[in-house]
Image (cartoon, rainbow, N blue to C red; front, top):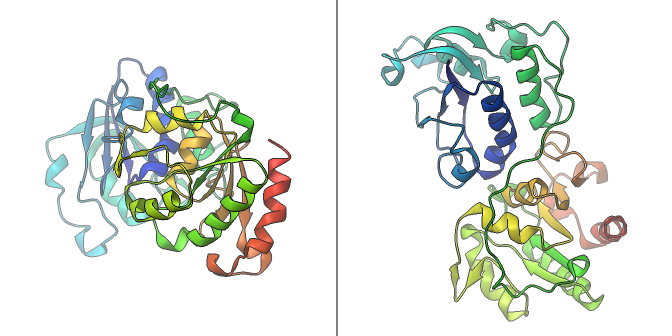
Length: 323
């Protein structure tokens, strides 16, 4: 069975949310040949490949499927000679769905326009709006394969040796902070996180900052304030292997973060997060059971920068009491 899965774009957080879906799909169709395609880049091809390398047989990035109405009549030369038994559309923008459906296929799934273009219909009224994104994907599997999947399985994390890292053994006292996010608009000011880190240290906690490549400029400030950054050594990242970060995550009691990729790494490693949301949806992007969310709109704020440490502290300490 030849299967084509389409997603518009996969940054690290987006990719992680799809891993259990892809692993489960492969277990349901063991002899399938799965092609995964994106309009832009996919972290599943690169950073997250160890998690799906036994599931995905081919990647097609930059596939010329976009939301331009002008391009709709054009043929997609990338897929001209290809045909699939099943195409699964993971997004709901109608123009992209129409372009995807032009690829030769036998069966087509899409929740776009309330299943208007789909060969599979939502006869059991599964939810596809305002729900946690992993549940969205598993609802797709339930409809296609006609079975109930109540419990979303845990992600299978490859082992990575972190024995040489200098991390305190008392996990309950170890707190991680990830001040980054893919878009600047999703970042609570770093100065606030730094102040929170100092408050926690004064209360006896061991605080570690997790900085991705885009946050390298924060490394000096962390070091100057005597905070460890486990991903970095001598000004360079130890590795970009995400299984490294997820194994380090297990040495932490929790993570304080924005709605960014690192928060997903911790949540999928089984570590609870306290996550601030400004422009994105907490319901869609908080892993049930692993994330406590702060939505600034609940405090009548429109910008993350308006949400102060004064508002954050009581929520933080209530959260820590549950860990």
